[in-house]
Amino acid sequence: MGYQVITEQVKEYVTAYYSSNNQQQLLFHTIDHTRAVVAAASQVARHYQLNEHDYFVVTAAAWFHDIGYSAIGSNKHEEKGASLAASFLAGKGVEESLVLQVNNCILATSMPQHPVTLVEQIVCDADLFHLGTDDFSNYNKQMRKEFEATTGSKMDKGEWRKSTIALFQSHHYHTSYCRELLNGKKQANLDRLLKKDNCISPPPLPGVPDHVAERGIDDAAPVSPIILPVEKPTRGIETMFRIAVTNHQRLSDMADSKANIMISVNAIIISLVIGLVVRKLETTPALIVPTLILLVGCVTAAIFSVLATRPKIPDGYFTREQLANKTVNLLFFGNFYKMEYEQYYEGMKQVMADSNFLYASLIRDIHSQGKILGNKYKLLRVSYTIFMFTLIIGIIAFAIAASFIM
Image 1 (cartoon, one colour):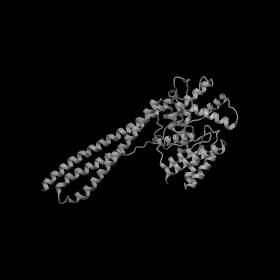
Image 2 (cartoon, one colour):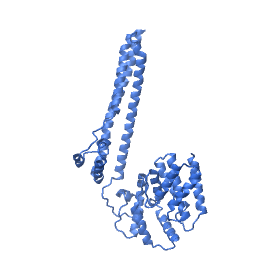
Image 3 (cartoon, helix red, strand yellow):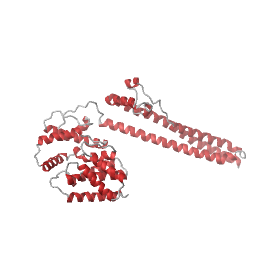
Image 4 (cartoon, helix red, strand yellow):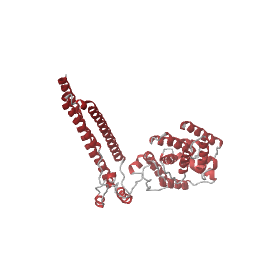
């Protein structure tokens, strides 16, 4: 299926639909807003490196998500948008399962948002992307003017502000990318609304730590103190843990790759020696010693490589004493894979409720990975060293044997 071609056709259809169904009272839900949502959805989709199929679902849903406003207004506009999307895509021969995914993404944007899959989460976050941008104030004014134009009634600024504050405090971004990118500015926008509403101590947005909230606020709009129930790690610490885990995973993959190379090379050499040389030992006894050197060295090197990749699994249980003493690492599957979900759930609740326990678990997990890596690379070093000396000594031994044969 030519996803790019159909995406371009979707763009042309939606743009033409807005032009032919232009409603003067729609000051926010316009083609410009739709283009902004499509751009945001594409940005998030690229971050998650979606495949061509999912990327099409996201962009198509973004184009159609608010088209229902031009057709029937705000009431159940998501259902109308999904219906228009289904009719158009079906007419282009798009398979039914793909149409269903697009429809689910559009319907997920209805408030309160209820995304389930990653593509639905991306479309929902793109729809309210503006809450965490510098342009929020302008968008909010357009929204109020649109509300007044469509309802025919004047909306008090204070009442509108209170409803916007309620939206901010009930909303959260669903993707980790949008939370990291937008939550700081979103908190700053909320603080400004609260300041105008004469609130002294603004409540924090869901999942926004102090340092994130402070980062998005300039000197003209100071931040009121934010108190969180659980101490959150700073961005620097989060970055450190993320980099450490990523580096350890990369080093582990490299070790496994090196071990696999060593096992394969030694297996090939052993097969060649057995197939080509062993049969000649009866007639050429001088080859016995170099052949044994090569075989023993290659087998030993292969054994150490296998040991480097051989998994070691713990018992799969943790005790109440370990949990109480905060000495168990619940981030490693080996400590809980034999336990029931309820037991693990209770344990994880304790970890998440105690910042010291959380930090200790992360540190213990990184330390455990480091110990495993150290053992892997030590065994690999022995394997490569044995292989290197086996080749050197074996070639010299074969050369000496060949001189006696000649």
